Amino acid sequence: PVVLPQKRPHHATATDDAAAMASKQAKVRTDADELDIDSLLQSSSVKETESQKVGQEINELLTSKTTKELSLMEKFKSQGGTRLKEFCTHATKIECRRQRGAACACDKLHFRRIIRAHTDESLGDCSFLNTCFHVDTCKFVHYEVDYSRE
Image (cartoon, rainbow, N blue to C red; front, side, top):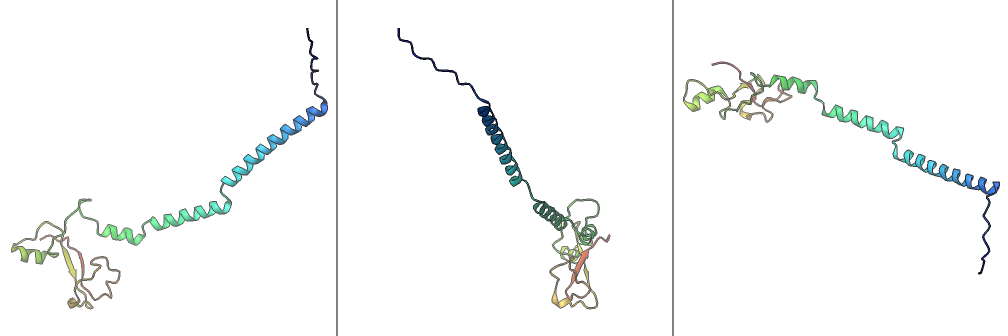
């Protein structure tokens, strides 16, 4: 029979062990460094965070209602709750009674004309109706909701 020479087992030396250990540690360090770099790249900087906060504050200011808006909403809120009430096509109660030939105006919402010393009725209605910010100087005819009882 033919006998083949046996390979001698390789015995690791201390130098080989140290090199292998250093290689493993270098790889672990490289992986950890890559994770640290990735997490740093993905996280927001202080400047970005502050910019986001400022953007949120600006958005909050732009979307919140002013005191004047809240006051106007309260002023023109329907009496008797949040029920919607249809406007009368004749606008004022006087015109409604005249057009209908009735003693009473209809149950729809009516307006009252606001005529001041500076109002020029020949100019017609203000395009802002009851929301004009210059009622004290605007020469057009303005209106307010007429809640009076007949």
